[in-house]
Amino acid sequence: QQQVKQSPQSLIVQKGGISIINCAYENTAFDYFPWYQQFPGKGPALLIAIRPDVSEKKEGRFTISFNKSAKQFSLHIMDSQPGDSATYFCAASRQTGANNLFFGTGTRLTVIP
Amino acid sequence: ETGVTQTPRHLVMGMTNKKSLKCEQHLGHNAMYWYKQSAKKPLELMFVYNFKEQTENNSVPSRFSPECPNSSHLFLHLHTLQPEDSALYLCASSQETSRQQFFGPGTRLTVL
Image (cartoon, rainbow over all chains, first blue to last red; front, side, top):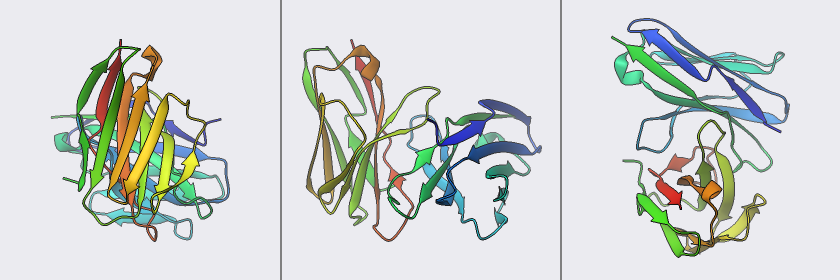
């Protein structure tokens, strides 16, 4: 059973546009929701993370929106750039067994000039 | 770089071979992880070590055998693998007090 569901599988956005990736979860015990960015030939790297006590977190052009009642969270990339082209993974973990990160299946983002 | 190194970066092995993957972290972390990354699947957590003690084994087949001699080094010993074991194997580390995991670049494994 997949703990975190992610969509879309792939996304193509024009330079300067907004990229939106969505994730949903079922386990209400999750209390930490990170997004990881992975470039070809590299391992995933933490991009931004949110806890459920806030509905939004912004870091530069990257924003996480969190809807606790709907058990959904999303990543918004404003003013998307070709250098943002990568695979993005959402994830979730809970306080107990905090080492266990449950990942989504990933979204391959391509930003075209 | 993330401070987590993995060797080799690429490995091709036959089903009867024995090989080992190595991971080293230079971040002073006390938890280390092995993940399997296959196309169109979520990253699969395989093993977790906290302070050199294995705390998670997510139903991984015995043909994968981890070893953690100290907090900085992690190995994954491989023997009699199957073609479906071909994947990118990622190592990660974290500090006990932090949820953030730092990943290495991975070893691309191909089993013939």
